[in-house]
Image (cartoon, rainbow, N blue to C red; front, side, top):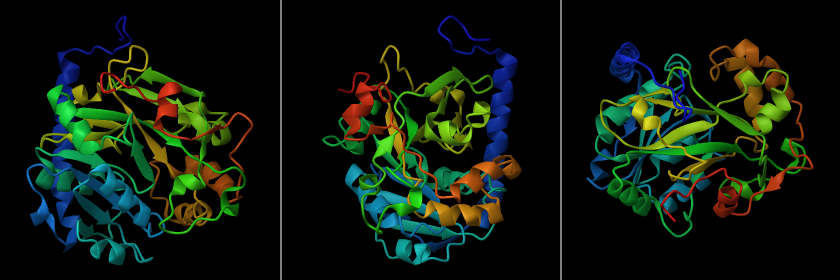
Amino acid sequence: MPDASGTVRHGLWHAYRLRWKRRRFLFRIWRKRRQIRAVADRTGQITEASILAFVTVRNEIVRLPYFIEYYRGLGIDHFLFVDNGSDDGTAEFLRAQSDVSVWTTQHSYKLARFGMDWVGWLQWRYGNGHWCLTVDADELLVYPDCEARDLKKLTAWLDEKRTCSFGAMMIDMYPKGPLKDVDYLPGDDPLKVLSWFDADNYRDQIHHYYGNLWIQGGVRERMFFAKDPARAPTLNKTPLVKWHWRYAYVSSTHQILPARLHDVFDFTANSRVSGALLHTKFLPLIVEKTVEEMSRQQHFENAPLYADYHQRLTENPTLWHEEACHYDNPSKLVALGLMSKGGWV
């Protein structure tokens, strides 16, 4: 039951169950390790101070040139990618990058807990003791003052505060006009065309089982799940963690175990610094990728429940509306209450 602060308090039995759940995830990770095969192993470059990025991709050649440059500039020292059977040049592009290690697999993304078993093995093997950023290729992390202070400064500050996890709210970015009618070239900043977002239609509650702040809302709920908002995508994430080999993500980076790592948000009292993941899903290629996903059915636990969502995306919809907010800089997200400064700035 929630206490007066809204935090869920469970007993010893629940803590015991969570420990065993984490152990089962770690066993899965160990068992699934043979599904991925290294095709470009440059992990010898990793030093004690390296900040690492872990990413699972499939056919993301359009996004990757900007994605890599963005995170290099933000302070990532080495990237560890799992390529899930790309056929658009993604694997070749990644192998050509000097600071990228690449593993490949043809196994089911869905049956590997949407890639988290594969990434979990790489985190277990290479991430211990490192600050590790786990993101998708369509997510760009921002946080207060990130223009002036990179991840090395942020993680050093978090180390000083003895804080080992960092939260970010996912914000869906979209264009002004039909999705497929904007021009975008590989290497361009996607925020030049995806420059709008929903600013104030979010809600949160404490997750009954994991105890994390569970955030929903935004444009996808407004457009696709208004009649059944409980099915709307989860927007809270814990993408940046000072990794330990005993840690394990549960569902993407929405939940992580041990559950104490969920203590990353405090929008009311502003006692925690937090960021945002600018979600660039709605580039023009979303229409073609959605058609592929309707066939593959690899991205949802119960794909038939999302058939209407996928079908509407293939119809080249307009997500913009009169109350849409234009993205200018991370400070705007702080002013809107979508990120917190904590004691960071």
